[in-house]
Image (cartoon, rainbow, N blue to C red; front, side):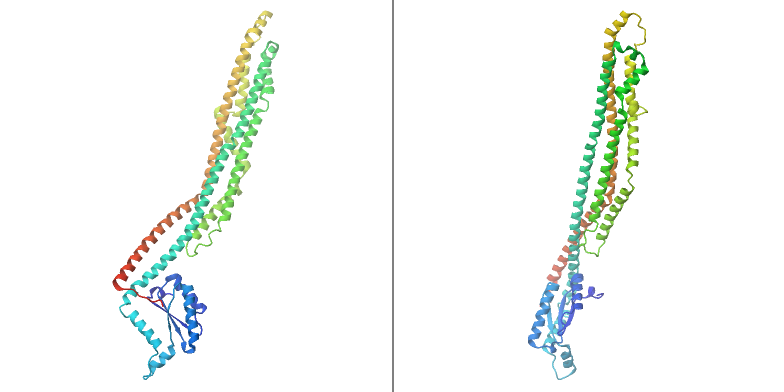
Length: 443
C-alpha cells in the first residue's frame, strides 16, 4: 500500500485455483478508491486447468473486474512453473503465453511507450483523487443545502414569532387603555352627580371629596392596570420560552443527520459539534430560565419607564394626581364665603355649571394624557424586551449560521480548485498523448 502511489503499472497476480479471493478483492478496492492505477492481471497456475475451465475463470475475472473496477482488464493466463522449467532447460522453449507476457512487459516498461506510461500514471492518480474529491464535495453540498434550508426555516420562524410577539402584547395595552377609559367614564359621571348646590358640603370638604372620588372613580384601577401588565409580561416570557424549546427540538433532531458524508474529513465532525453546541446552549438557557425573576425584572423596568412620564411614583401617582387636579379645580372657590341665600342661589345657577364643565374638561384631558403617557411608556418597554429576547434567540443560533456561511465559502473555493486542477490535468494528458502517443492496457 505504501508503494502503490509510486507505481507506474500494477501487475496483479491471482491463481486459477483461487481466482479473486476476498483479500484480493479488498486490495483491488483500495487501488480503485485510492489511486485507480494502471492495472494488468496475471492468472497463474493454468497448468492445473482444462481449456473449458480456463475460459470460465477468465470470463469470471473479466466480469468481476468490470463490476469492481468498472473496466475490462488485460489478462495474461500463464504457468510460472512451466516457464521456469523451460528457462532452466536449455533445450526447451518458453511457453507462448509466457513469451507474450514478457514481450508486453519489455515493450511497456522499456520500449517507446515507457515515457507515456511514466507521465500518464500520476495523471490517472490525480484524476481519481479529483473524482473522489468531487464526490465528497457533492455529499457536502447536499448537507449544506439541508443546513441552508434549516437556517432559512429557523429565521422565518423567528421572524414570524417576533411579529406575533409585537402584535400580541397590543391586546394587553388595549385592556389597560380600556380600564382608563372606564375610569374616565366613572369620573365624568361622578362630577356630573356631585358638582351641584346640593353637594356643597362635600365640595367644601376636600378630604371627603378626595376620598369619595377615589372610592367611586379610582377604585382598583392601579391594581387592575398592574394585573394587565403582569399578564402581558407573563405572556411574553412564556412565548420566548416556547421559542427556545422549539429551537432545541430542531437541533436535537438534526444533530445526527448527515451520516452519509464520507468520514475521512472534518466536515461532519465540525457540523455535529456546532449542532451540539447550539443544543447545549439552548438546554442551558431553558434550565436557567426563571419566569418569576424575569417577570419581576421586566415589571420593575416597566414601572421605571412609566415613572419617567408619570412622576416618581409611577402608575399610582399618575392615577392619583387625576383626583388631586379635579379636587383643586372644583373646590377652589368653594370656601364657605357665601352668606346670603340669594348669593348661594346665584352661585348654584351661575358658578357651579361653569366649574362643572371646567372640571369635566380638565379631568378628561388629564385622563387622556395619562392614557397616552402610560401607553407610550409600556409600549417602549415591551418593545425593548422583545428586541432583547429576539437578540438572544438569534445569538443562540449564531454558531450554526456562522458554520453555514463558512461551509458555503469553503465549498465554493473547493469547487473552483477542483475545476482548475481538473482542467490542468486534462491539458497535461492531451500534451502527453500528442507528444508520446497512448498506452492501451485493457484487454
